[in-house]
Amino acid sequence: MVGRIIKIAPSIIAARWSDIYSEIERAKGGDFIHVDVMDGHFVPNITLGSDIARAIYELSEKPLDIHLMLEFPDKYIRNFAFEGVFRITFHYESHAFLSAIINLIKSLGKKVGIAISPDTPVERILKVLDRIDQVLVMTVYPGFSGQRLIENVIPKIYKLAEIREKLGLGFVITADGGVNWENIYKIGPIDEAVMGSAFFMKK
Ligand code: DX5
Ligand code: ZN
Image 1 (tube, rainbow, N blue to C red):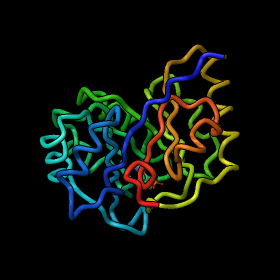
Image 2: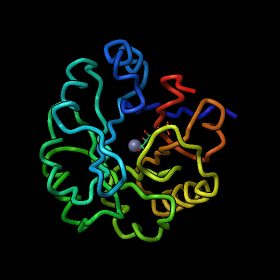
Image 3: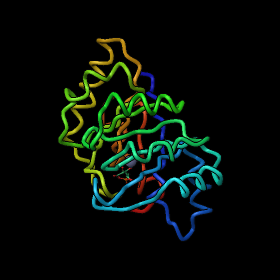
């Protein structure tokens, strides 16, 4: 069997911030940089806003993938639609009217992703799968890097790939959380893997 190519997105929140210039050099080895934006409400952690994200782009010149873990994503989407960002992903579980947010992100010229937390079944997003570019399957509960991958989420990845094939759709499947160089090929038919602590060699 020919090896599958999985794109790797280093998750910048897992970098050593006291040494951010060299960490950004390291992150340039990935396909694009994943930026986790947390508001302290949707998840019990606060990370960074659009100014820092912009600086990461200026320093790295790598395309940015924005993962919004916000209670009200619609309030902040415009701030993140700057040059350098190629995709904005929001959570199904947030206070989000799916169609409106999809339209907003598209109107800003960015690709659209929907993230689903470990307890959210794939069926919840079925009706919008033909309008989005990515499904981000959380393989940990959102909030922190450095957690262990939850293996019982893997069937959702297979299910999404099956639906995609059956309906002839084009969204990519991303796994986010607890992915490392050992488990990456065991988590099913993913196109992209976000990698935080493993990429920055924190454990
Ligand atoms: C968790 C974030 C992840 C996380 C990944 O809420 O969405 O992107 O930073 O880090 P690791 O790979 O360490 O789980
Ligand atoms: Zn993420």
